[in-house]
Image 1 (cartoon, rainbow, N blue to C red):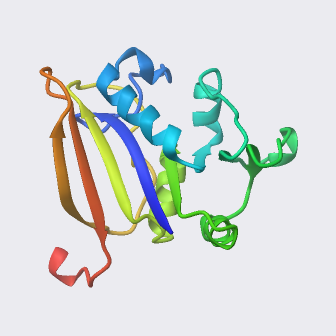
Image 2: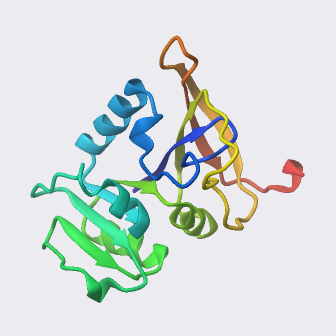
Length: 181
């Protein structure tokens, strides 16, 4: 199974502009088109509760597309079988379960805690990172949580627009990290 972490950040790595969690106010239409094309194709999407709360007005539940929302208190929410699931499971357990249920690809789409937990569990295969041409002095950094060293191999760079929005795609290098330091 392929697990892809999808992120959009400012050039200095911010997921939000200050306290405003509405990323649609500053992300480019090109990134939004790319992101929603990934969502359209994916059958399994994992995000954190805060990301879910910020984006739930845009989420369209459909049969055959499972969204798993990671939260410490899943009993506070209502699951919709096969479409929306609230879970406090550890990343490895979720991925093992999805693998047994014959999912071929999984998107991890949000939350710096979620990103860090899947990276630390060594469950991410690729990272799709859009850099928007902004610098934010304040905001949530995409890796505020501590992670183990991860060596990346760039396999694709695409300029999405004339303003300089870049799509960077990386594979995780699972080889020994000694030469990385």
